Length: 459
Ligand SMILES: Cc1cc2nc3c(=O)[nH]c(=O)nc-3n(C[C@H](O)[C@H](O)[C@H](O)COP(=O)(O)OP(=O)(O)OC[C@H]3O[C@@H](n4cnc5c(N)ncnc54)[C@H](O)[C@@H]3O)c2cc1C
Image (tube, rainbow, N blue to C red; front, side):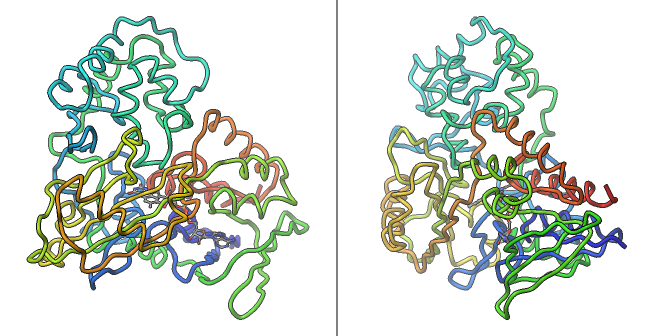
């Protein structure tokens, strides 16, 4: 049987290990004490809550299908029905349904929401009358959508969504890589509004269907279940330090563990790592790939989880939470009212209200350099302004995700093509993870499985 070492035990690496089950003898090296990477469930006030990703996209099948395949089908659950809400102009304001990543399909539905001025709404409606040559180059989301719909729409509707998914900014993220569905329409030419309406009508999910699903007990259960089901040897607390190419297209991995160095050899290696970590290992073997990977910027974020005693709280918010546009100058990027959003969490702890606030977009490192207690106080103060005076939490915890989210800048897809081309010259080596074709869990599962297919047979 072919032997494969998967470096990185996040969901991408575990999906690769799953894909290889029965076809290869697989070892997963994970530097942390537990597998899962950004899918991590911890406890606060004795309650299990997600500290990283809290949902899996369900319109794209890869993550929910894998979760079902590893025995979590019954644990998959829909969030409570609630509109996406933006905290802007001093109030929580629901986005009208029908938007695509914040880009509206029905400008008239924005009237009366308080999200945009009358001029801003008229500017969106005017998009249908603007000339629209097919887009032939990659542009930033802000440059393209700003020219089509006006800056106000970018600032108040699109930026909050980009902050939520990428911790990124519209003027830096690539339209092609961060909003591929909209880029595909732009490349066809013609006004976007009617094209978006047609796209929505053609692909409209059945009534009541949701775009994401959670895992009862926390999405952190998902990587654990994949790790158990894939049959791979999982070595936690093991950090790969370097790679060596051996004769016969084999690989040697030099790793460090708490007990000292560890050397392993295999027919193939899958690097399921953040871009900067993959860059380190590739430096001696593919300098071009190393340079391109190292050039991918990353945003750091922090998740502040808080538990309130329901009987003692002055006030508890309704809805699933809110997103925040940076233009309003608030610290918060988003808040998720977990006890409202996930029935399993409410049922597990009915006397407690759990929420999480997120802070940190690209370029906000000064904010994140502040101590935990400062971030907690600042988050509470802003939550009080946004939703009302909830009182003091029973418990609060800050989880920091240093360089947690890769930023798909303008030209990202071409950069990834160059990385993949350079890596393809290394037989028996494949790359996967959030740095390449999507940061969401479903996209990561897809890259993991594709990487496994690339190394499953000898080159
Ligand atoms: C706060 C936050 C919230 C998010 N929310 C969502 C969400 O709700 N829905 C969604 O779809 N996506 C969400 N995402 C994005 C998504 O969770 C990640 O993009 C995805 O989980 C990345 O998986 P990965 O396996 O590619 O990388 P990682 O999860 O980063 O896994 C890489 C693993 O490699 C290990 N490692 C690193 N270096 C080495 C080494 N040298 N040797 C051995 N091991 C090493 C790390 O410890 C880590 O476990 C969120 C991300 C963050 C940060």
